Image (cartoon, rainbow, N blue to C red):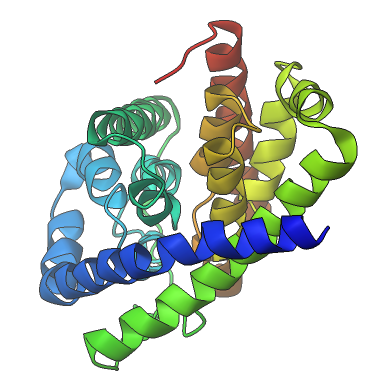
Length: 282
């Protein structure tokens, strides 16, 4: 067990400087582009699912939160909202960038999520009638202060974000190493990987947890070889950060909220199962 702890610390600490650099770049880009992003999504009209799925793929502070705000006052359509939720992956990109995965594979991963979000959003807008009713809800930027320090300088914000995510990575790596030590790598792999249906069902449920921890857990399991690509995709499609939580807070039509939650979950599970059955890998 001492070796497990030492290996966990060494493996996790290797990521720390790279993680900080990635978050520093992301914070800089987010501060420069957030207002333009909001204007673009507002003016996208019937192309909302296309624009939303592309923009949602880039990790930005509170993008799914902004989408929830805009949907509640019906500035964007249901299809656009779902497209953004599905393409948003919270902490997926920084973890993949620091994992040693090739850039080509990361781009493929992101493109697959964009296409799925885009198609789902367009189909939903095509077949589900839009409600033109406007709700008297103030559009306001809601900042998730747990992992988005919008009013601070980018250096301090990046450092806080890095340390927050690093703590999750450290815990998950320890759990994975301990599980391999106690159960054996072969038994653990067969438990998590072999079932094409259970993986996406469980992974999508984890993804719905309104916290950055869900995307960290799913991505780390994938990087460590404990999840198939299909199961990982399912979990990251449903992982929209705190966007759905904000939707429940602002929209008092809880029946509609649960329908949206159910849509996101079902789409994620179905896509994950299909990719597993096809044995798709990137």
